[in-house]
Amino acid sequence: MPISRKFIAGCLIGVTGLAVAQAPVSDLNTGSIEQRVSELERLVNSRTSAQHRIQAQLDTMQDEVNELRGTLEVHNYKLEQILQRQRELYLEIDNRIEAVTAAGIVSQQTPPPTTPSDTSNDQSYVLAAGEDEAYDKAIDLILKERKYEEAIPEFQGFLANFPDSRYASNAHYWLGQLLFNKQEWEQAKGHFDRVVARYVDSTKRPDALLKLGEIAQKQNNLARAKQLFDQVISEYPDSSARKLADNRLRALN
Image (tube, rainbow, N blue to C red; front, top):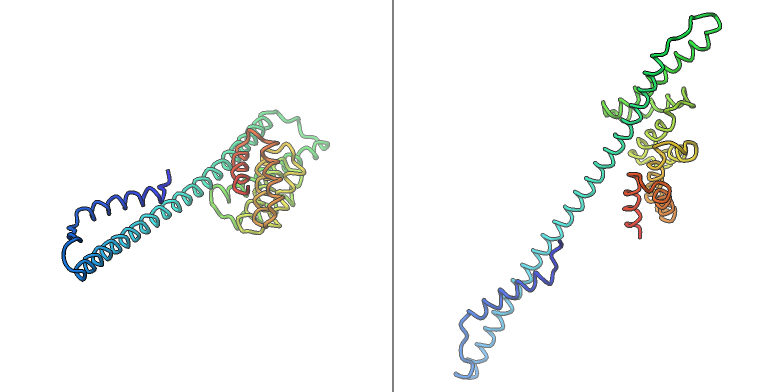
């Protein structure tokens, strides 16, 4: 709970009042006029000095409160980034598990005897294997090796070679995320736009909408940012992206 300035001032004034009350005070009704004036000056100077000390202490305490608030905001921001990263990793792990499961089902099926007419089927198996290998290589550069610069051309090559892949929406999303981290807003926006427009059933679509809103916000297009955040909230009310969109929207209002 934030410490109010009034509360701090009240505490310090109470302490000062006690100190002044304990200080010896001469009888102002006795002595000459010069002595009375001198005594009044001493009291005024003493009180002024005490007020200066109070103000200095109050300013110091307020600075400490502001510093604590700033530290708390930094920690909250870092925590939000960590949670977002974990959410993205969980989504990617789910997609990988689905892909591995599908590949296992295919491998368990007994292929028919090879004949000259089966050449197209053989090519399909080769292409599928190459597709999985290429996608795994690009993903590993992000999740395992953290070589983000090298991952960009890998995803670009994957999309060029397998434009109709079942991983295409994920590839566009991750490529957009990599470019977003480099602050290449327009290029990142292009990939997130593809996820939103072409892959309406993709698990990456709510996150792509969220990123488009963040790009609009960074480009000072606040009206568009609010529209995109509202879209995440209305279309994906139960998604993890909804909470982040809600926080972004409240910050803009």
